[in-house]
Length: 214
Image 1 (spheres, one colour):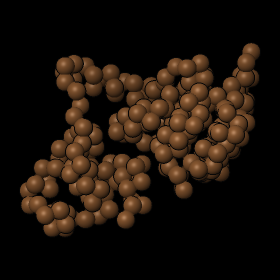
Image 2 (cartoon, helix red, strand yellow; image 1 turned 90 degrees about the vertical axis):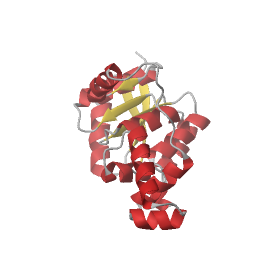
Image 3 (cartoon, one colour; image 1 turned 30 degrees about the vertical axis):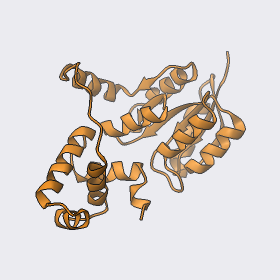
Image 4 (cartoon, one colour; image 1 turned 135 degrees about the horizontal axis):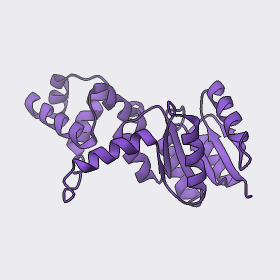
């Protein structure tokens, strides 16, 4: 039996230790290294060439999305499985675009992560059972001929400013538009990205590094 070589990336030491114990307890999985941030994850991936990277999303220095992009560019043969507590559809979509092979929720049973690692190691894709159910329901209610529109640059500007705490009035003044226009851009962007409220917008902003931008 071929052993699946895994790089474990998680910034919380206690959580990381628990995950390592889980993965190493499997006869077909071996944790070859650990990293506490995305930058180190990229360096280890390039040096060790693991088959699978189990990747947290919210981390210092470089978040999981940016690290996934970098790993897939430098080590396209390495599969990335995102492990996070965030179940937002926007997160799933962005990780897929970045090249992630799996998306697992931390609040799910441990078997989900083990299944995801094994599926990713043989070139497949895996989505947490909770998210599969929601995605199936969403697809059943969606017009199959309709594509999800992309977010415009102005809509992105409005969301970014909303995430860092600016009011509609402040956004309108900064962009030279009316408050009503701000509200329209905000509503359109949130609908397209399936964000349900300001908390979702802030999470999305963190994922994309917006809060670190000037």
